[in-house]
Image 1 (spheres, rainbow, N blue to C red):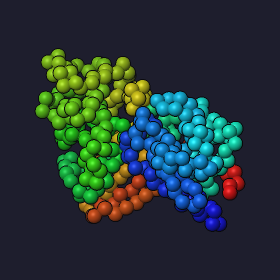
Image 2 (cartoon, rainbow, N blue to C red; image 1 turned 90 degrees about the vertical axis):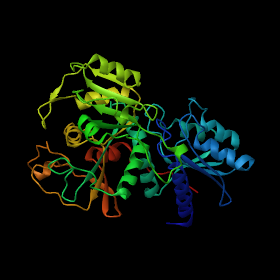
Image 3 (cartoon, helix red, strand yellow; image 1 turned 90 degrees about the horizontal axis):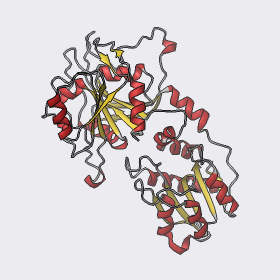
Image 4 (cartoon, rainbow, N blue to C red; image 1 turned 120 degrees about the horizontal axis):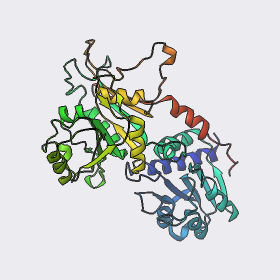
Length: 406
């Protein structure tokens, strides 16, 4: 790598680090960071703090002030060229006298992609794509949820499946005892996934056995920056649903109960739930036979379609074996966050991650792209992407041939 390319990578890496700071706060927008450089010195930097707030380029320009004239800006995403809740960043860059723009990722929205770059070029600004593949890969991964939701042919949110398992892949003992397979270190890491997703989803079994809050608890993040996800419960049986469930405290976050419209619910229970501002969504959908317990369950694809229409762009699945199997069976999982604790459970009847799988040939088993592994105390974290995500990235968001820079 020549000296110029090393410098470009250094400044783009700083922009990427800035972009990642507001974890979970920018949805439905992308994560974007920007760094302004002049005479090989950073004179301004910024990032998009939250949806509706100024974009990264604007914050960086404000930080640099008048000194931004004739400078170079490194930005992780193509500058916008349209009016939304904020004005177009392209015009702000032009007005500030920016001489050169180096970007990492084109806007994935097919309706606007390339327009910002074209506007800058038309104004006489030099525009280059970063050549460092590491930066390109980071920019795609950082905005994988945003990229997913910009595709016109995808009618569901991005789905991350999180599970805690024993070393032999069991979710619980044969008596469904699962507290705790992993230690506090793993659970802290898991809460970062709650923070970054719009919603968290469980089933009736987890609701009744764990009575969870489904909120975010991260020691390293200020409470003012914590964002609790929308809590979603899928169920077709309302027996044992009482006012004492923690998830009914909607002062912490919204709570949605989604159920088939054929489900019988006691009128007093409905009144109690509504008094607590629990949102009830009865689905006019055909139900499917549940392979685990022969009860009826909702069509997962239709449920996700409803969530997408509710402007929920990402969902973290934290249910038990029935929910995990249902989402895997429906091929509606994009990402896996698996936490393995230092226990061996064994037992043929102990539930595992995908008990309903009908795979017989190894070649038919999904090959997971493992992107991260980490030891957390006496736990091992494995982070992976499902095969269709890898194919999507290769086909739709491969790095374009960069224009030669300075």
